[in-house]
Amino acid sequence: MNFDALPLDPLLAQAATACGYERLTQVQAKVIPSALAGRDLMVCAQTGTGKTAAFSFVLLQRLLSQPRQQGQLSALVLTPTRELAIQVAESIARYSQFTQLTSLAVYGGANINPQRKALARGVDILVATPGRLFDLLGQHGLSLEAVEQLIVDEADRMLDMGFVKDIERTKRLLAHTHSTMLFSATFTPEVKALATKMLDEPEWINVTSSGKGPQIEQKVYPIDGRRKAELLAELIGRNNWQQVLVFVNTKESAERLHRELKLDGIKNAVFHGDKTQGARNRALEQFKAGELRVLVATDVAARGLDIAALPLVINLELPDEPQDYVHRIGRTGRAGLSGISISLVAKQDEAALAAVEALIGKTLPREVQPGYELGAPLPQRYRELDVAQHKAAQPKRGKGQKFGGQDNRRGQSRDKARRSPNGKSFKGRR
Image (tube, rainbow, N blue to C red; front, side):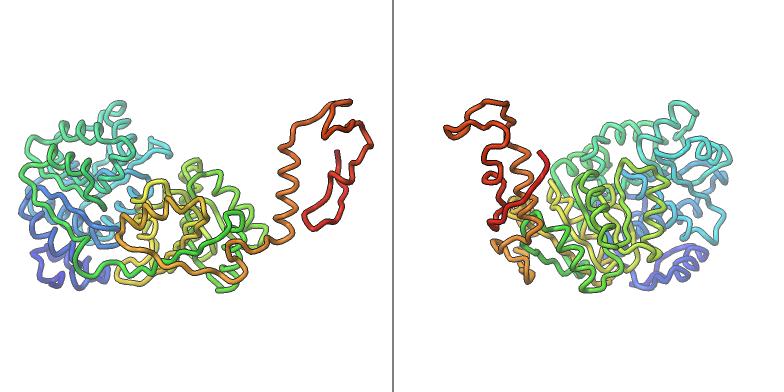
């Protein structure tokens, strides 16, 4: 089915054409007709399937087709992260570009005053993270009593982040008669329980198990865990990769990799929760513009980031939760394009890899990179590092203490104890 076959306002149809939309994706073909009829929906759809356009065109069409006051808050979209809120609001603005409808994203990590003033001027659609929404409700008199449409995007992530009570509280503040749509990448028991509790005779739509999904080639590179950053830098140089999104598990890992890549002459930036929203936005825009070759990110970037034609995602560290792997690799292979996902897996990562493979229902192919075979002798710099770390871990011995039946006084047999693995002696500070 094509977009022009939908019963959309001509101004929305014009926007769809301007955005390059022709044929409906599966999620759009299933969601839009039911949602236009006002039904509650529980939708399971992976990232990159066009779900934002699916619910956005519905919100806009219903606002245009009903008598209402311009600038009265009538639709609310809840998202788990700032980046997703910004992205959704930008999409809604594009789809409504030929109408007079207004939208706004509100989120933490930014000054609340500009957001409060924009709301005071009048907004038709609000996209919000829960924390900032309740700041505005509690401290600045925001009212949701006229909201007749609620979207909960990334519902599974909302539950993971502990927002379930916020969602339930939000529902109680809306207009007595309203419709709700929940979108989730997974149908976990918790998501199903939330949908059963919140939705009124919902239609259940699952588009993850049928049809043509994202075209992502997934690979595993077995490697000694100490050499992951080295291999990453070599792959970037050898293949002349210009745009690589690299996932790690912690902000400490992100900062460490950032420094190592910088030493290798690879321009990169970090993206994690301790960075200000402005710094995260700048890093993302530089990455999209091709000014950075690598964006090193934690799972704060695993959902919501829409980077056009991103060719490659690398898991330097596999996530603790296998569902996050699906969201990470979903940053590539979007909008019908192909993509590649590579996971660097050390021996200690095998359990996490097994959990991922169990979730996606297949064994990922292993490709050993030449020179990085498991069990191969480590380069000299790693052997020297091992020796230095071993020595640092040894307990300090005071003057006159016995070791191996001999006095360990200053000056006795120091060189014998300071041999490197290749048999050569070396000097160092005490």
